[in-house]
Amino acid sequence: MGRFDGKVAWITGGGSGIGKALALELAREGADVAVSGRRLERLAEVAEEIRGLGRRALAVPCDVTDEEAVAEAVAGLVSELGHLDVAVANAGYGVTGRFENLTAADWRRQLEVNVVGTAVTLRAALPYLRETRGRAVIVASVTGMIALPTQGPYCASKFAVRAMGLSLSAELHGTGVSCTTIHPGFVESDINKVDNRGVFHAERKDKRPKKLMWPADRAARVMARAIHKRKREFVFTLHGKVGGWLGRHAPGLVHFATTRERVKRDTARVAKA
Image (cartoon, rainbow, N blue to C red; front, side, top):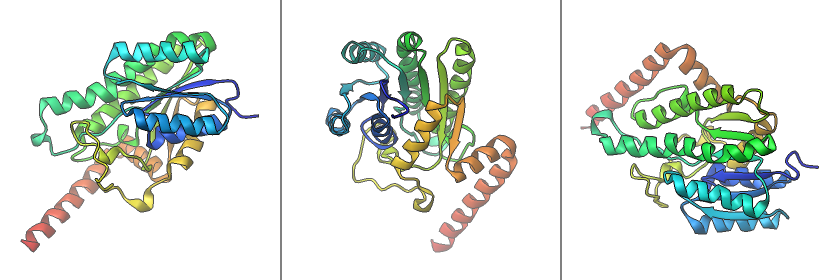
């Protein structure tokens, strides 16, 4: 018996990384799973893997910035699979760069996908989750607790969705529907292969520290457990927990550490010139 036997899950950003790994983990735990995203070929591959685990699967392409498309996607999957028990708002990407180099368009794209897209996803799912006393899930980030230089738009978006999750959790209290906001640390994904315009580049290298990186399947296992337990917030990876704690309780120390590191890099660059 799996923890999600007989349940139906929907995951946006389900074609790769954490979204794909979570889709497969929920299927192993007994769920039928619909995955959404913009790259149909990726979604189709994930759906085929889910069917290989003996579960029903749907590949439902949609862009979370298109409210009508999101509503149609969730209505379609419920019509096909019968109901909805778990809705995971996972779609997102990161805009990076020094503040003075970022345009209004950069900021709008970042917030439209990560913040508005999350809100639109959960709003569309909630009527169906109320019917099943289901689970709403937001995949946020430890950067929703700790702000880093050159990560302004991404951090701002994740601070925002953390607030969204806490607010929604309070609104849903007593209804039987839960909201779990998940804050991963470094996990294997394609996020660093997407540029500031949201365009995927397969050849891009992930510059995040490999020694701290969790494999996506390991991340999916702990996420599934947190979703099942209906935790309000869940932070994982040790470095993620430490970083989140420092960001909330010792922001001055974070400022000192990040600015000191930048000064060291700038000094080394000048010395090489």
